[in-house]
Image 1: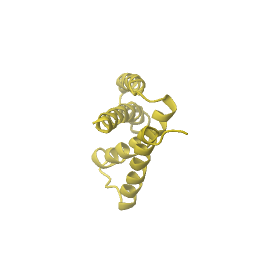
Image 2 (image 1 turned 60 degrees about the vertical axis):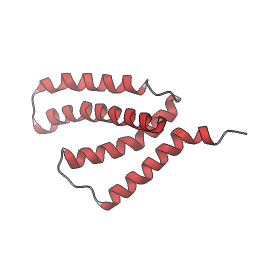
Image 3 (image 1 turned 90 degrees about the horizontal axis):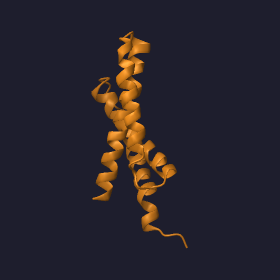
Length: 113
């Protein structure tokens, strides 16, 4: 249950970060309206707040979060940008998510001597 809770929190955190970065991208790269920066700022503030909700040490959270971010970014690529990820993308995601589980929960299984 702890793994599902942690991974779900990471996914929501990644979405907040991606939205917070995607909206300024639309303004800068595609000439969308300036007002998009306001929800971007809110989204990035939510992203930072969500990172504080994890029970692990900050460095461990940031390291593991990176793997989940990669997975969510590929889903964004597919769902929003309409670019289908390659099989090698999915293999990479599998490797990253394995790393996330090792980083977040390995210390609970393997205790230091």
